[in-house]
Image (cartoon, rainbow, N blue to C red; front, side, top):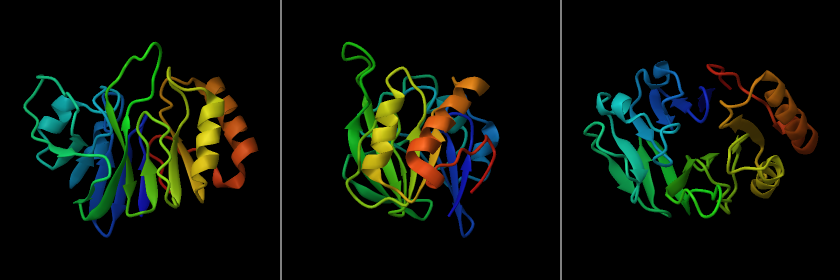
Length: 201
């Protein structure tokens, strides 16, 4: 499976000519969706889903069953429940979790699903829900208003994957990203690696 990181939380997965894109939000590059066969959306926030862009794409878009995407554009979606196992772009996907992490005072509270793709790669969206099954590749949130770095490190240790790539990092400047890389590298070791936008592994 080829993994290509795009800005913020957007990741493109390719295998045997099939393309699955996770969380193509308003901060991610449009080229992430070129040739996409299906899209997974972890939750309704615009940094994870660009409704206008997806409305014209014409491919299956899977979203949490309780997601509210607004009325900006008609977007037919396939609604997914936590625990559901389904196929998207030929990949086997299992939905985990259920709610967005709390920022402050219980807000925001919206549906959020983490997706385990082909029982190998896990994208948690805006949560630190541990899937409770073996994970080969973890996409770990690096920075957010709902996140402390120590929580992200503990999450990565709890999942205990073979390799770790940071996501959710668009609000970090170069100095902040270097600090995050330093902490992740020191605590998680050689299995941690940052991919620049457009870089693949």
